[in-house]
Length: 316
Image (spheres, rainbow, N blue to C red):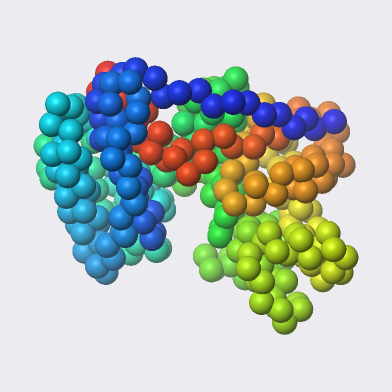
């Protein structure tokens, strides 16, 4: 039987002073990490959108935030920075290949950031770095083969194999865009992507399309399903079925020891994890059954991941 596991998070711990930035489509998180691993001056700032010059605008914001953090903590001198962005990322070359919500193509973000900050910059994909934090500090630290799924408005993913992130040139981990059905059409252009059925955004949208009732997110759909609403129950069950199919495919192809599930939908708790484990069991036979693990680091996972990669790059 597929097991559901939990684990308390570990602290970031002592290390070099670094800057950490987690750029999102709406907000950018920033902090200075001190020698004890505390996140100082943590704040959210709107991410600037400037068409074809968004990459330069984002780096400009990062430089401003870095200057403010340094001024507020003059006794702490960062030796490196960690910078995370969404989309398709080539971490080795330091290039943002593509980000639909930020509008850049082949942007040399690491080089721009190093010039602006005057520091070495560890540059990476946001979900990959957050997954690395879960592996090093959070729910997956007991395992070397891990898949992380972040289920929110969409579904993002990351693979850690043999204790190392598997990047595939920036294209690995797009589990939200793995096909699980013939439809509906996804915003990416494909049909039947997992996130069109099983993301929190899709659950709310599909219920409204079927019932004509506007709801305040997937949590309300679940509440209606538990109260006996047949339309809500069908939408919720379809989401669990799609997730079970995707997890079973991952078990058959990657054989992870654990699958860590974060994002807003993970807060459904047993209403998500228990039926999902049952669906996975129904689909597997001889396969290694992955532990299903709730993410532990919450909204700070990205910043912690940025701090980890910055410290590791400084040490290297």
